[in-house]
Length: 285
Image 1: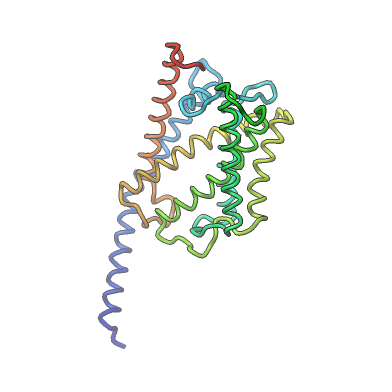
Image 2: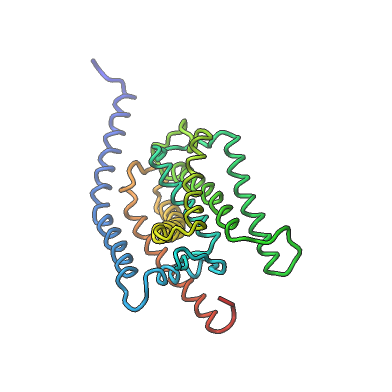
């Protein structure tokens, strides 16, 4: 049976695309090793750099991007992020992992309108609490006395909303095969599951469950570094023309390596800058 010219052209196009995919996969292998090596070097530096405890190194690494003026203690140790950012970035990372485990790695459809409205409301709630805290710091009229418990709680809602938005943006921007029929969050039960993870963090902090110090510190710290890395990855990948080309995460090895290096440099420079300004007395730590 003879094929039409359109079928022949389509087969040729698919063969060319497959060949390019194989070539790109092969060229990505060195970048995968580069990413693993760079990540390993950064983690080794954090873990084994002598002279300071790990939680202080975590504190210092994000000093330029976290206010760290309302930190809370857990089991007698201060968490490396402030109360609000602990909520935001633990909520972000836990929700992102939760959605991935739900099988939403290709989801590219908004949640139902009511859930979108709920996510927007969570963002607004954190904004209200944030401005209220700012007005207190500026000795301006305010609605209520700020509390760290509320800072963390509203931060968790914000982090959940950020995770939903970030997964949606990454899938729509970079994936070659986004699932336009699958919602990032499909119903209230799924949203409740994401929020419950954050509420467990909240309960552990303010219930002073000492054994959870390191899990919470690591999750929150990884969340704040991870979201900066994700933004850099998106920008770098788009600049390298990866838009609509990615099927497997390993294909992002090259832009991921560049984004990881940028993230480390940005964090280092911003932390150094803030420590320097504090040492000069130009800002208060």
